[in-house]
Image (cartoon, rainbow, N blue to C red; front, side):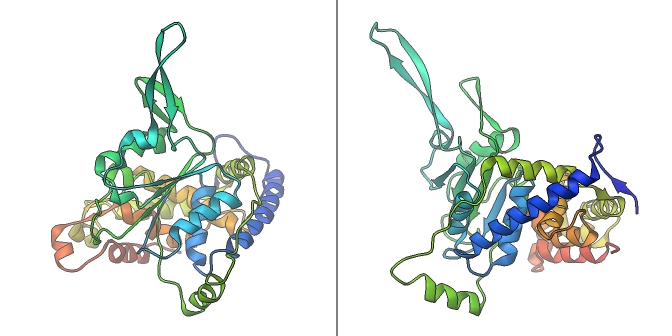
Length: 336
């Protein structure tokens, strides 16, 4: 089995030692999160994979499923400087990015001073992001891709690491605006948050309706998170995994000979989807205690990585098709 690595060849022994140390820290993070978030193991896994990959995540689900609680808990457990913005219809871009104000000194000299907005944090929670107007939603575009913002022609760098974890209500609900396609593509994964199972909901009932709620504590610092993110990028990727990613993403684009896609998909994922699959497959392997990703990682991540980067045709929507249905058919074509 051939292995594909980056331009710089990393020391395998050091990668193994670093991975073992990272796995111990990841275990502590998982354990601490489980004291506050009950069940939802797949959701927690995908959010942590997103962060370990160095990306941004979009959590989608109906109100009351602990999306906001999960993001708050992650900020505490990972030791990140976190800020929360409640997105509302009257929210303005300057409420997120910051703005310049005019100051006057004792001599009467006037000058502009920049007041940073909440985007200048290591973890920004964009709560109910699709309740703000598209203009305000798009305020995060530059920050999410380039890790800086430009205000009055002046560049302002964001702290490291910088992550956006946004929560979104289903677009069928009242008072929501669909996110622009360009912004959706900036999210590494769209993580669907389902209802809890019966046992998880039983714990929720018993442990969150008493006098005191459980609170998480920090088990990691931002510097350590950056080290894990760098480790993820050093992990080797088997050539078979790269081929599976290329085949999957190409098949998701109309015009490449896949009948299901040609019939139902209006436009498919771009190269960011391929990059996201490589990074997330590496991070998922590390999360599971493995030193290299497998094709199973790619298939498990296909839906959260691809679903927000594809759009169905009008005919497909009229037939009751969903993007998940198309991705499920695509996954079946990939050889394990």
